[in-house]
Length: 62
Image (cartoon, rainbow, N blue to C red; front, side):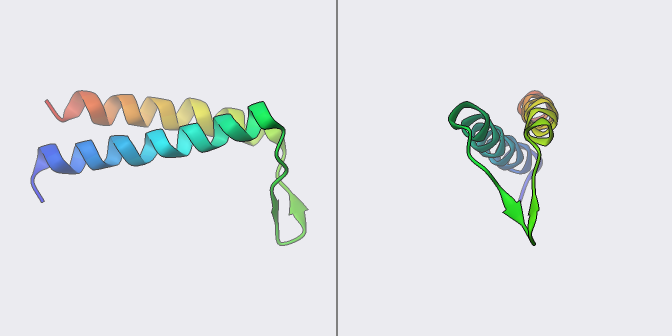
């Protein structure tokens, strides 16, 4: 896999994660992992971090 393909695939994967967490926040979905309910603020952090990583991957592919 060449550099451009790697960064393009990474950007798309992080964008999918951002969309999933955004839907969770907007729809009010609950997530439970091993009996522990995931707080909503973690999705906000994941949105910010995932958006940054998607943007960086998009910029690095050039």
